[in-house]
Length: 148
Image (cartoon, rainbow, N blue to C red; front, top):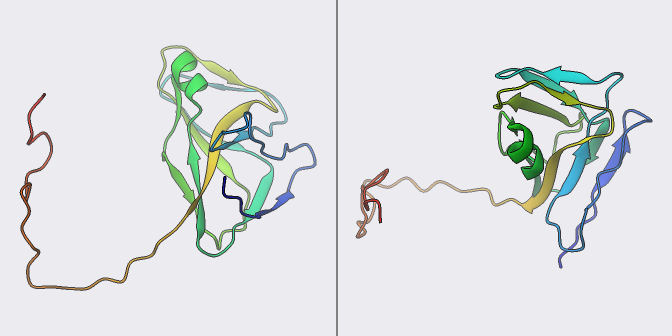
């Protein structure tokens, strides 16, 4: 498994350093840093602090993703999923959560609220052309291949 060193600092002394929950996990769990529990009503969005900031190496990004357990059990997801943290961002990681469920959900301090996956980044160099080459699909879009 490939590994990359990423610097991390606790902005809040009560923050948890993100960790992998299994040997082959691709994402680390991010935990809420809260003075008191918060309730997320159906349809409501909240921004939840994690108390940590990171310095990614050049050529990497952090992708912030929902946790499947919260999504399935409670209907909790992330508004901008996946969220992206660029290598030049040094602020606190905050999670924009939304309740797609039908009941209010309580988030507590220390609760695992999102996953963070570190991934390599490739930047493009645009090459403007008059026309693009044709393919079998060509301009076929959403649902063009049918239901089967």
